[in-house]
Length: 125
Image (cartoon, rainbow, N blue to C red):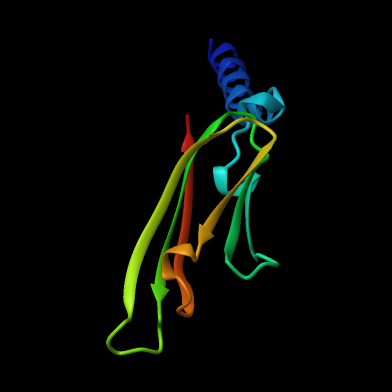
């Protein structure tokens, strides 16, 4: 009777040890990547110097809902004419796609401008 119990204990121990290693062999589709690992961000000054193009790339296997926001300061060197404007764009970004938005300095007229506080975020759609 004692040998039978010992055999079952050894089998139970083998299953406990083997089960995690079997789980590691699971389907690769079950492995989840962070959205941060499969998205990308870039910002480039426009050649015409009238703003900045902000791009978000989706390399994830799902569509994403993304938001890009920024602060535009007109006449940043002036004490009297200086003004801050906020901009934001919310968009759907399909799988394997890239979307660009422009933070335009058009609201500043002929005053100088400065772009700051550029932020972006994406979440599953």
